[in-house]
Amino acid sequence: MSNKPIQPERPDRRGVMFVVSSPSGAGKTTLTRRMLKEMNGVELSISATTREMRPDEKDGVHYYFKTREEFERLIEEDELLEWAEVFGNYYGTPRGEVERLQRKGTDVLFDVDWQGARVLKQVMPGDVVSVFILPPSISELKSRLEGRPGANPDAVMQRLSGAGRDIKRWGEYDFVIINDDIEIAYDELCAILVTERLDRRKPSQGARVDKLLDDAEALES
Ligand code: ADP
Ligand code: 5GP
Image (cartoon, rainbow, N blue to C red; front, side, top):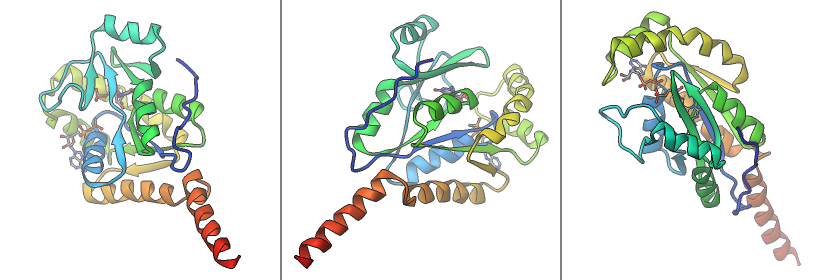
């Protein structure tokens, strides 16, 4: 894993790095896809992966689907900001994606596991806000995994047996949402991003107030 920081090219608006993780099946994709559709100013960091495409997915939209050889080349060439092996497949964040979105001053949504969340926080500590989404119960998690398009029993068992290992990481996140009622969970997720955007300590807020002060001073003189 690489530790090179990303330099923003638009210092007036530094996007929030909005990192969302969950045990597989808890509803993170459902929640984040809706957020990307309904909220302005936030875009997905599209990860690269070696896993098979699901029926409702598109290459270059949900993931960049790669062979293992292609993915290993990305690692060797230091093209990934972070990467991890999850359920026997590689997943990683292409560095270019984050640079592209940072340049635009857009908030960037990262759908990564706890390993990715940890590295992103190390690389961009001031920019990352992390949210962990949990299911209301393990039996509900099982039925959500079984009900997902393209589900097969082996993948369901593999993901379910990894849930405890993921849930143990909850203390590393800034916020935790229990996704029981989808509407409530969605409102909570949006509220976190909105709050982060308004944080006085964010450089973008400072730039806006500086502009007000400049204009106020110009009036005084
Ligand atoms: P993840 O991305 O965390 O693996 P998904 O978003 O793919 O999970 O959700 C898994 C399944 O659970 C999907 O079929 C989704 O429609 C369903 N689901 C998500 N949230 C809820 C919820 N609050 N109540 C009931 N079903 C849900
Ligand atoms: P899925 O196969 O269900 O889309 O994702 C499986 C897991 O891989 C999820 O926990 C998801 O957050 C994680 N994941 C997806 N993309 C990345 C990535 O770029 N980096 C890391 N570390 N994990 C990722």
